[in-house]
Length: 431
Image 1 (tube, one colour):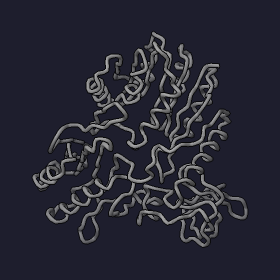
Image 2: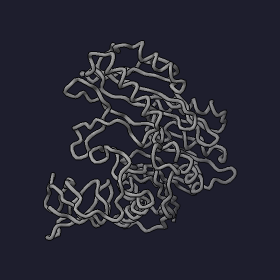
Image 3: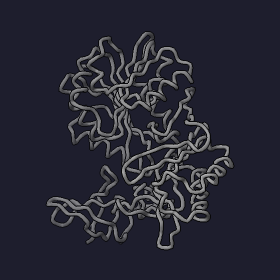
Image 4: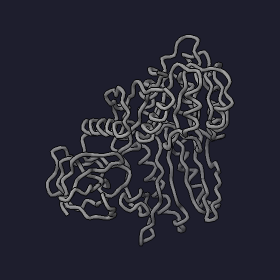
């Protein structure tokens, strides 16, 4: 089947139509492409198709940097120049708001950083054993997520991480017979500190050639932390520190943050300052004003704003993240911040005092109707909503409108070049 791609839509799909008007969604495509495609999933009004060949390339199509791009599920847009990616993402973001009937001032999209490659501070790789029992690191096949695609390197994480991946892979292939015990590999890197944490995940409590892995870690001064994690068939999980410290550190402007294996940290370290500066600009904290940070995680946003506010409080359900948040208070010698371990939807019922600025940075699923209602009835001057999903963001904005809280401005930010993801920061005020 031949399809002309008309535009990009969210989740990395190019959109085309058949002669009878059925929508066809094709990943790895570029607006203007004429493609030969194969239908792989069909519904009444639309279908998903797999790109088989490019009959007539779009003028905006470029050669991807990564040789694995055509199969790997990690990127969707490496075949589009970065300036064009930004424009397409801005259009997609505006269309998403329009679809939910959200009317507001959308600021021009900005890049998180000047680096469209090698920006990620962590990726989880799978191990893949071929028919010769030779092991490779792998990513998921984009049309068939359960299948794995062996890769030699990744252009989203750093060149140092690619070097470490190659050395770990070589050690396993050269020294170890039971290769199938190795399941996953995660490498975290503080981009500003160059501190590295390695997590080697197996299904066996006994790590073969443990001392060789420790020796590898000692060879690299950047590796500050090396874990052996166990995920066995019974679903039980263990984490053992083989070498170094329990945590690594990352810096954002003047703040230093501790990162443990269990704690979420913004994936694009190079773009965090851009993101947090957008939060700071919208928060517009005046002398004497207080801030409440919902879903505070390791306290990164709250601490970033603490130099401006009289008081910052935060709540987070993940105890490991709260442990890091409290450690980060001490690391930065901050006196006006407190973090509480509790569910945000439950804790909001307990808040008795007033806060001038409310910060929301929820998971991709967004906010519940209950927390939107409770927040809308609090006494506040400004709400700053950070989101990594335009659709759930737009849905929640409409719910806020039901309680008289209106989105005044929104700043889309590209924190994930080469992928379909779009971050945004919105400013809401009471009408």
